Length: 189
Image (cartoon, one colour):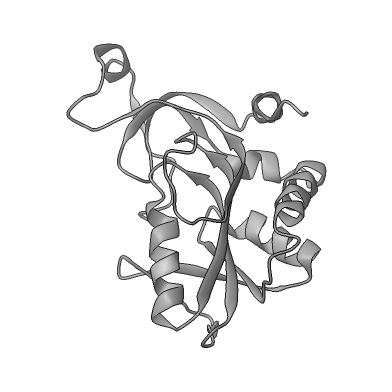
């Protein structure tokens, strides 16, 4: 089995410091998946692992939350030969733009790069259900909850691990001393 954490470290995708995650929680580590996904061999490897897991699942479309999930979602859609779309924030809410649409009973796989609480994925799942689509599974590269966040009964993560994160009122003193970085994409419009 590959040491995926080593791949993240070697590509500069696993960062140490004091981060405010997209979820609003604070952590001493951050996965910048874009840094590992810039290398075609890793992008293809991760995408094939996801494809292999969902081989027997009937899928029409792959969708990802913008911005982090777009690269992996697009490649998963490519290797599976499925339509690929993404949801993005409009006025603070996940929405379909750019002419993307979801049909009633369309079977959709949600693909994301990293989850901590799964908030963005939940929003995309709600969007799919709003349009009458069917969520057939959720795939993520890194599950920071180590499997504690269950978003779907057909959920797959390549790297499940527990990474401590803290509410803003419970940050350890050692972490408070480090300047805060906010690398997430939730604030993007």
